[in-house]
Image (cartoon, rainbow, N blue to C red; front, side):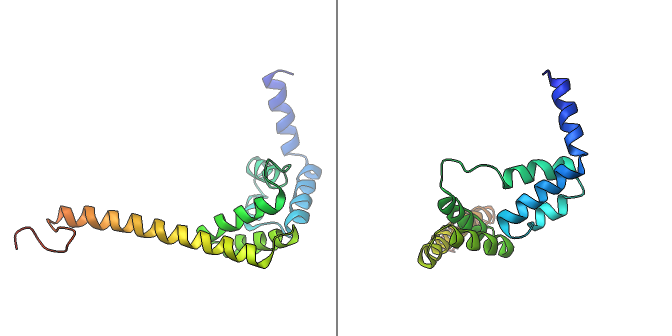
Length: 142
């Protein structure tokens, strides 16, 4: 199959309502609902299909429990309540304990706090330096 034929097959698949419904059902079964992002993309098959395929893709090198704990940490760092709920439920469903989820959240919070402090302090130093203020808070002219 050459590239032109491959593109035609993909185009035909994107207009296949049965394929789109099958993907939606697979995503819903995996997450007990269709996540907001995918619901928003449902009317745009060229965007929905790749996102849905990633959502229902085969497990990679990480087992599902571990992958969901990573997703919990990522969702926590992004402060996405919907994502947190979905991935906490998935982590628990796939064998994670309450304590493992809690520790994952606490680690994510420590990383987020550290990152927030580092970025904030760097910006403070740059802005203060631009105003001629040293890190100690004193102006060099005082």
